[in-house]
Image (cartoon, rainbow, N blue to C red; front, side, top):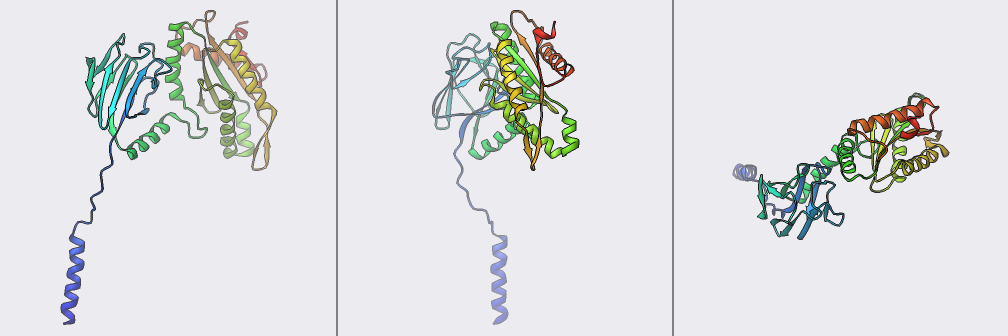
Length: 309
């Protein structure tokens, strides 16, 4: 009797083990997104909300693009549930889906859309968890982990675009390069944790004292850069001097240690008086100005017009 009960109990356990333990999970609804494969939003996943999303060069567009090859209101995507339809808005260069020019097209998951030689994106249907994962990958790809500002890769891509736009539209553009003076001494005296702390605080000051439209990034080591669209040399120098003075005025506190720092700054400006053949020449000019600031004793700002004298 006891043996039979034990046998029945083991049978029950055996059946439990062999039965599928998966529960049917209710499938999450899919949301519509566009993933940028090329252009200044490279790697960015943008949500397409229910209704109409305008894509174009205009700042009033729902997804504004810094691309002179894109019309002000280039195309629109209308979302209704999991159905999305793209429509060309009479753009100059056209809207292409999977390499075919369209006026109106019902999008499928994975369709590739091109609206200029510099802007390409893909239509995606995805759930929220996948979007969170992708957003984190994007952040890791464009942000510097120590300073939490843009990295050199992102800076280079944006400078190419801003440089091209400024030359084509004949608008001003300034590039600021900033270097922390005697950074090796800080690391040697206070340790590398203190050095990382200083870099983080320096990036906070740099970011807070530039405009929303400026692009601030870590260029490498203790060197930072800022792209200043529409800025004249005079405006860039005023901004640089405010940053330099702010940093020099107050020491940073790390584990009760007061650490005084200064920075040297170089500025290059693209305008009617300063013509650069390429964005690489533009970077070199700013770097030469930074070198001049270092040579002149550090804790100062040098701009292109001064470096030429």
